[in-house]
Length: 118
Image (cartoon, rainbow, N blue to C red):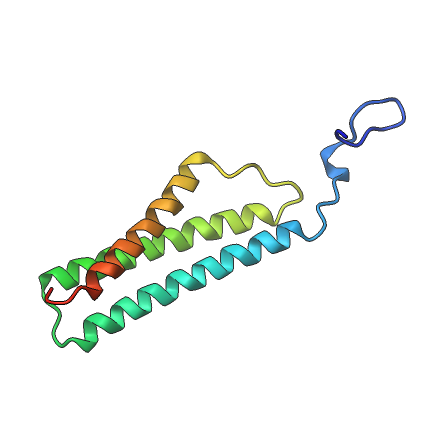
C-alpha cells in the first residue's frame, strides 16, 4: 500500500493528505513534555530555596536548569509551530539532539541538587 494515487496513477499532492488528529496529538505531547520540564525546574528551585541560602554550586546548577528549560521551551515552541501547518517537515537532527541534551541536563542537574551534603 503506497501513497494515494490519482486516476492517471500519479501520486496525489501533499495538500490532499488527511492527517487526522495526529498533528494535534503530537502538539499535545510537546506541551505535556514542556510542562514536565517546568515541574522539574520548579522543584529544583524549591529544593535550593528550601535548604537556606544557596551556595555557588547550587546557584550554578539552578542557572543550568533554567537555561536548559528555556532552550527546551523555545525548541518545543518551534516544533509546535511547525506542526500547525498541513504537512510539517521531519524533525531536524540538530533539534532532536538539542531537546535530548536539555532533557538530560535537566535530569542530571535536578539529581545533583537532590544529593545530600552538597
